Structures are given as structure tokens and as C-alpha cells.
Length: 294
Image 1: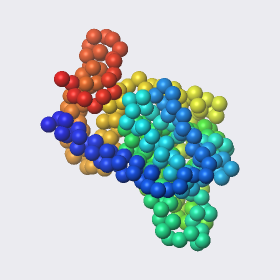
Image 2: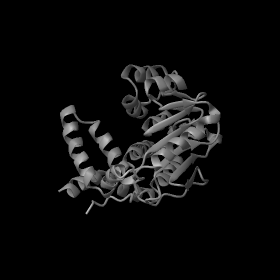
Image 3: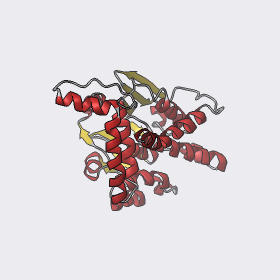
Image 4: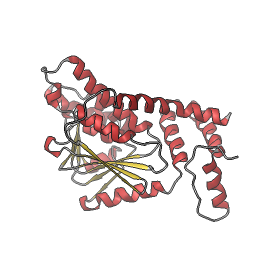
């Protein structure tokens, strides 16, 4: 029964992987240049937005490349955490407005916004924590990307804004992530005025997790990722999925669901290994497997 409950909890994630992976190869031409760079070592995958000339705009090609890098071998035990960073002085300027002009048809516009929403929701469905490493300006869908990540570390010079209202395109999709990360009145002031939040204001209101000097940004992000790598991937995957699921429920339902998940967690091999290691005063040896303890 515990295995069945765990399978039901993971089922939406499996469906997301299947549909997203299929879409990623659904006959779309390869991007003309490498818009994202993927590197991985020691359990940490770095995905770097790599189009500073275009202010790392989330063009259709950029979004496709980002999705591919997020999904690549995502079930591997070797992958423990993902960091999203960017080249250049702008973390991400949002959508490429040239793709949203009247020269492109409604079908193309729909495709851009649909894949953007898919990427943003995918981040929270992945079985590993995703960290935004922000050094510079994050606007519109770029701000949405930061808000969608599980953790965000920003340099002191970073700023965050949703200025779409100033050009006649209200940031309605970024508002989904902002409204779930910020107090409502703070989010609405950003959306109504387009005025940016400083890094310290973003920290105060909960848009980012930490603010550090620019020369300490990578060091702090690596420190967090290494700490995450010390834990069991299977336990973290269960915990992350449960966290986002309970956030949409009322208090009584959330406690009922998470109480059962705690019980199910104890059936995992790593759930019992962690407790046994604590009692025996030794370091746990994680399997990173979703198998149950026999």
C-alpha cells in the first residue's frame, strides 16, 4: 500500500517528464547556436543562459534549449541539484519581443507562452532542487524564472521587475509565479508600475533566498548545492513533490496528506538508512533509490 501511495504521488511528475521529453524532440529544428550551456560535475548541473548579446531573452529557441538541459538524464542518481545562471550583465530580460510582434501569427505567440509555462512548471516538478544564481537584471519572464526556482541566490547588484505594463503587455504569466512568491500587494505594485525591486527588497519580500556580494555569489551557490548533495536524492524528491502539492491544499488536507507521506518515507531504503546511521553514530550511505526497505 505504501508503494502504491508513493507511486500515485510521483505519477504527475512521470507524466510531466513524458510529455515534456516528447515535446522536446517533436520535430523542431535545432537552435542555430548554443543558447544554453550545460555542465555537470559532482552531482551538480550548471545550466548557463548563454545569449548575453540578446540579454538572455527567453526566445522560443532559448526556452527549448533550457527545457532540454533541465530534462537531460534527470532520473540519474548522479544528478542531485541544478543551478541556473547566465552570462553577461543581465540574468534574463524576459521574452524576445521581436517574436511577439504582429509579424508572427497567433499560433506562434501561443507556442512561445505555452512552452514558457511548461518550463516554469517543470522546474517545480523536477525531482531535484533548482537554484537560480542571479547576477544582474531579471525582468518579466526572467523574473518569473527566478520566482519559479526552488531557491534563488542573488548578488547585491541584482534587480527584479515586471515592466510589461509600460509597453502595453501586462506580465500576466510572470504574475503566476510572483503571486505565489511575494505578498500580494508587493507583487501587484511590481505588476502595475513596472518599477524594480532591489536585491535587498527582493530578499525582504521572499523573492530570493540570499543576497551576497557579487564576488561571493558563485561560492555561496556552490555551498548550498554541496549541502543538498549530502542528502538522499529519493528523499529530497519525495519531499519536494510533497511540499508543492500540500501548498495548494487546505490545512487539514495538507496535514492528512503529509502525515501519510512521513509514514511512506519511512518505508524507503534511505529513510531507514538515515535513522539507522543516526542511532549508530555513523555517516549514512545513501542508495538514492526509491526502493522500499526489505
